[in-house]
Amino acid sequence: MDDLAYMQLALAEARAAAERGEVPVGCAVVLGDRLLARAGNCTIAACDPSAHAEIVALRAAAKSMGNYRLNGASLYVTVEPCSMCAGAMIQARVARLVYGCDDPKGGAVHSCFEIFSHPALNHRVEILGGVLAEECASAMQAFFAARR
Image 1 (tube, one colour):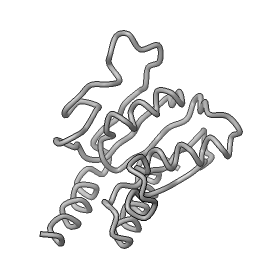
Image 2: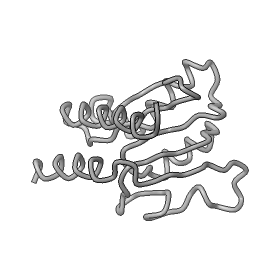
Image 3: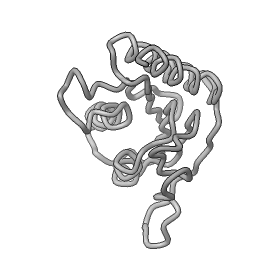
């Protein structure tokens, strides 16, 4: 599978999250050609402010690997990660981040913060943004438009 196919998996998780009344963010964690985990936001259902799609998927991926370090893994997420999720990716030693649309109200890749480029960090993450950006943004826009 390629970046588009893995982002489609993340989008499916985002859509499922929206159907559950959660903010539609979806994530997939991949190592080589092996899908380690996929998840959607579940902060409301779990009553857990840290239950963002990325965190849930990273936890599941780490359990499946038997190690909290996911060296060489790629993380696909539909929306630019927040600072919490960016920090978790650094702690997990994720090698590559692929995301869909920007998050101008909390994105920590470049929109509000630039977590990954801080010179003091001892781990670097390769970043590719804008993959299926229109579809990812549409999922968010439709979700919030329905609530207004």
